[in-house]
Image (cartoon, rainbow, N blue to C red; front, side):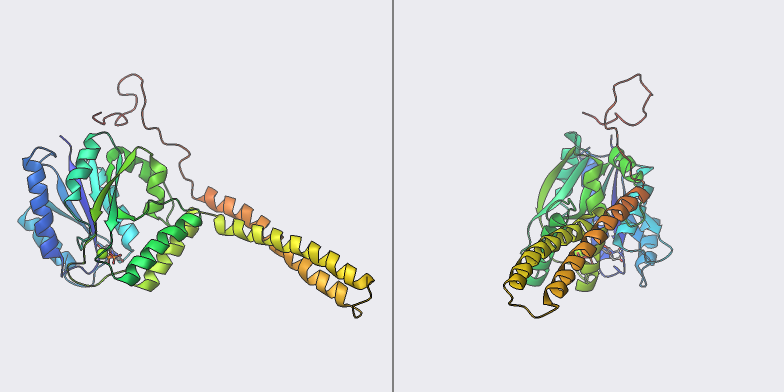
Length: 326
Ligand code: UDP
Ligand code: MG
């Protein structure tokens, strides 16, 4: 039977942990009882350098019930890194992970559907919000705008999906091949495998405590996502340079016409032409240099060039690659 690990990053979450741990425990116990998952399944809290009693609470939970596990980071490293730390630790012990936020804004009843989809053979199951009624107008517009901008900038992410997702051990092995330190999981995970599906749920309100993502952090997060996934901004500069350069040719013709019609004062034609031509050429050149820097950037990430998902060969040739019950 499959071992499921729930991975929950926590940063100053003392206000929600008692309720979160209670609900997650009930969920896990019912899944174990119904035979969906193994009784070796665990709930793993990752303490991301909290300044409050979060870690003490996790320790107490673990001492009380071995269903709870804890990972403590040496200091605050941010949501994405905390999540990665949890996933990579869990990978060694489990067949499936589901990552979710500590505030339980993501409906935990979707866990059943996720596990079902895993049993249907999917390696990755995305939790997708189908409504944002409980989000404030501001949060909703900024969040949805964010997904659209991301897409336009060449970062292929799943619309309205945050970090609530199921990943099989195989998908996690794939994820571990990505060596980049600026990790943006929402963008990386779709690159790992297309053997994925969505599960829909309604997003709830934060139970208690405050959002750890104020606007400033959200903007930084968006920018991080774009620049870590795509070199499209560079390409936009090249495009702009080309446009300005084309405009400069039009201006050249225009100013020459004016010049020969004798409608200009001395020096105007050459000044106007050089401003546009030089500007356009410079932008174009920066864009071209940028193209190469973009390539260097992507090369330094040393991302895997492929991930094999199935292999038909002699047994034991590829351990773990084909252990999906399918
Ligand atoms: N979180 C974290 N480290 C941080 C910030 C947040 O581990 O530096 C965790 C936090 O405890 C929560 C999750 O990331 O479990 C999402 O944060 P939050 O709910 O505040 O974000 P929002 O839902 O408002 O976007
Ligand atoms: Mg939240």
